[in-house]
Length: 165
Image (tube, rainbow, N blue to C red; front, side, top):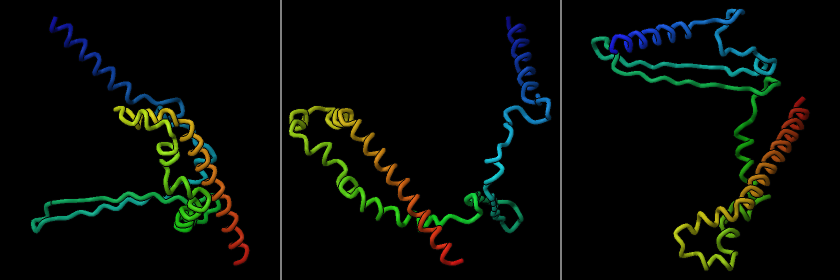
């Protein structure tokens, strides 16, 4: 019994080793997908920096590394992410101020019936489940505002570039 089990285990190991090295007809590894035009168009610039520390005898005592990726937009210009991000919160406050300042008021405190199940163990869970559609609508509104903000920012950025030319 032990012998047949060992043979079965050995056959499994040998088979799995061979499965790792098979190649497709084109010579690429399995799992490689053909690159699309979009993938070739906007690849990140990658920078890897490794810092090593040695003791007086030349022995490695520590190291750390930093891996960074940098993307540019399709035109090759860098996106002014700081300006975009810094302007986003005031934009959201202007268009969605009530929800951002007190997001739970309409869910928990405007409902006169909420007082009856306040002492239940699952009060907040039940409120969340009852108001799931409210959350979904709120997230859709916020995503729409974000997209509208991106469009306005892009328009403003293009106008500034035209003014400089």
